[in-house]
Amino acid sequence: MFGDYLEGNFGNSSDLPDISGFDQHEPVIPEPRRAERRKFRTIWISDVHLGTKGCNADLLIDFLDNTDSEVMYLVGDIIDGWRLKKKLYWPAAHNDIVWRILKRAKRGTRIVYIPGNHDEMFRQFTGLNFGGVEVQRAAFHETADGRKLLVLHGDEFDTVMLAHRWLAFVGDAAYTALMGLNQWVNAVRQRLGLSYWSLSKMAKHKVKNAVEFISQYEEIVARAAAQRGVDGVVCGHIHTAEHRMFTHDGKSIEYWNDGDWVEGCNALVEHEDGRMEILHWPDEIARRERDAAEDATFESERAVPAAA
Ligand SMILES: [Mn+2]
Image (cartoon, rainbow, N blue to C red; front, side, top):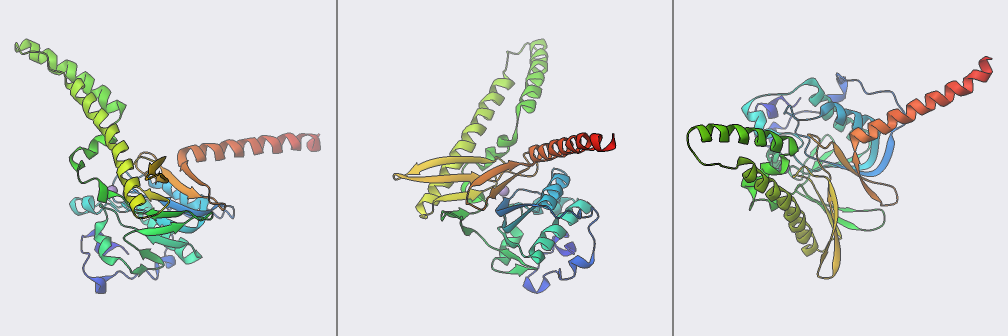
């Protein structure tokens, strides 16, 4: 159903794919017949990167099957168009995610899709509606307790430091590997009569830059939101789930980042009373399984006297 898009043929609006009959197909990973879903007022997810091996499709399917909300924002980089054009990677589970999102819209969830920089080809469809999914460039969300939030992907704000952006995703493991490489490089350099050269020192400097980059990015996005007169901002893009408070001209501004489904597997949710929370889905699964195990123990303990 997304074939044309996957081949990089985005065409014009007359070439829109017909997705009206999607629910005549069944997903490969069936939806569980579970009536109990955790209900939220609002859900925000972003940086899913469908079409790449990095996407944690199974965890996202579990999230979609266990939650529900009145409104759901897809805050960009849902489909990774840049990479799809190079090499097609589209397992059945990725189709299942698209299927579940369309199904959600059909069940009555208002779905707002704000394309990011990796799925910017969808930005040309701003204002259109695909099977209940509204495409917007940005959105304003009002929480249950009346706060006004600006929702956008966030790539608009990192052009200055774009070249170093990848460093934001380099963790300790890469740093350790670099230190090993550093030793090897210097053993070779010593044999060649060259002076010591610290690769790890350079890497450390770069990683420190990445931390500074994230911090600066958060501040820039919050300031931009403050200038638009809102109480806060929700974005994605830098794959770092976070909640921070800033002050701008004596007024406080809340910054929320809903994380990603490549490494973090986070979602941002708003509860019925307007309280917001970042969920780390692997932790939620662990808690659910622990609760289920405790329930089973309780049930079996209760069953003992009856059996005796
Ligand atoms: Mn992005």
